[in-house]
Image (cartoon, rainbow, N blue to C red; front, side, top):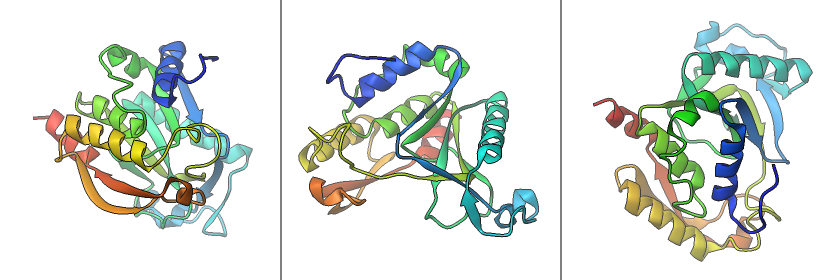
Length: 221
């Protein structure tokens, strides 16, 4: 869908989700490259291999199977699905629940529509992925990240938020996130140069760790 200029990524995401309604849909950055990891790493596949290499670039069949799997998970009540980064080592299971992920988003619009008017989409200009996750996790909805269907993408690249994103904005907006959700869920870990090929353009930032599992757990008490 088309939006006004300069409304920000968080507001743009809200408008996309509202436009999608109760459908199931994906939001994927334009530089994403999908791969598939060998099932030999995963105990839920009895560690039986399904390819001759450790991972491979996804072909059309792999992508079909990815979306078949994601639809099945949404049938089971998952509201939001992501993909693990390709360079990271394999996990012992093919998916992880109630975990942080970014850049690739597959939404269950049927469930998201139940709370879409309750969510504060624009609480922060960056860190909006974590904010959205806390909005639904604290209401008892679960997410899931695939560790079999993996992907790679860049960080802090030209375009998008590039014209206004800098270390000052990053730190101020993540502090808003911590002030609202609390230091229990949003933890300042260290100061560091922003990650990725273009991270030096951003400079020194406050790096935060999120506790989505704890947020979901507290929603169940």
